[in-house]
Length: 141
Image (cartoon, rainbow, N blue to C red):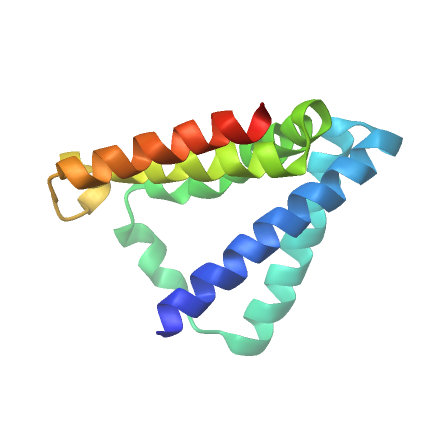
């Protein structure tokens, strides 16, 4: 249950972040906004970390280098999302973002990439993903 609540909170925040960032980028530009967002987020994360200290700094050596650059995807996420919101609007942009996330997650799980347990995609899931994509297309008509 706690995982589902965090997923809902994350989805809410992704949507709000995208809309807010799109508005900021209208005034100062996309890459400037992306840079500012990450500087502010880094500052907040460091403040929280210094108060919580839930990790083990020495464990960085045990993490494959590929996973340590995972945060850099955030740069692409922020810029892509704010650009998509500018061009097609918040609802279609977020809908496509979600379909892309689910599709990517299914591929990763079905192949067992990045240490995930290999789970075959069922026909029902494929139909569901296709219906979601069709729903996004219908939503934009």
